[in-house]
Image: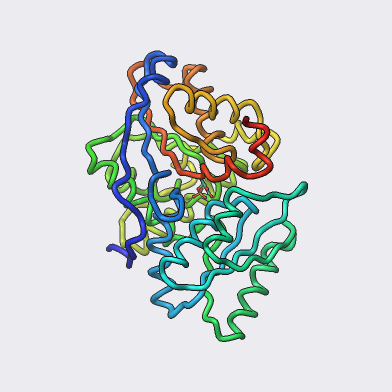
Length: 320
Ligand SMILES: Cc1ncc(COP(=O)(O)O)c(C=O)c1O
């Protein structure tokens, strides 16, 4: 059963070959799925989720979207753009980083006309609840979108994204991508399972230990399957996560991300971001060098967006 959906994204996103990087890796064929080109508000994976989440918001009579994330959250920026497109108010609860942040996604948030409430990490959930309750009491009909847009409804979007890839005639041996709140991974894994597809769906964890992410993604996949009436059962063992590239933690740029960003830029003219796709691509390159992929395998790097963060104050100087 298809869930209600609004049209926000430019789809299908292209699938392109990366011949120059493939040649340096020797023996694998590397492709990229360009979800950085989903269009709305600078693009990224959350635009797909927001097609379903905003339909849910509309069905609930919402006039405002409320969500939360890091100061440079791509999810928050895409939610802000979706609200602007749909004529809704938007309120973001953002975690203030040590050392501050400006530019990048924050600049775009302000262009999209959002209201921002700052908080620290430990009070994030309480602040979100308070903002929701206050705006509800004010009669502004807020709709709460969870962290990362990762509800079962948001995950359903990536079930459809997997089907979109199949409809483009591509069925790779492995899909590699950045995984964090688990919705993207849940949907892709569900897509593979529902189609009896043998593709390995490998999430490179950006911040969560593998056992936590496997649990979250499998729960989201089961709940999304039940909403869509798909007879598929996924357990945490079915979710492939590599958490060995988290390094010093969320958003901390190291040579892993810097080298990957430079390689993709210089060899393919393709932009990655410092927090998510830079880390996932760094992991992919390391796995390739260690021989994780078999000779001749087709490996699809699912680009989940995030490039506005390249222009955030904390990254600009360390990348130049
Ligand atoms: C650019 C980018 N890639 C990957 C992810 C991770 O997606 P998910 O939260 O569905 O695991 C995010 C989440 O914010 C993101 O912004």
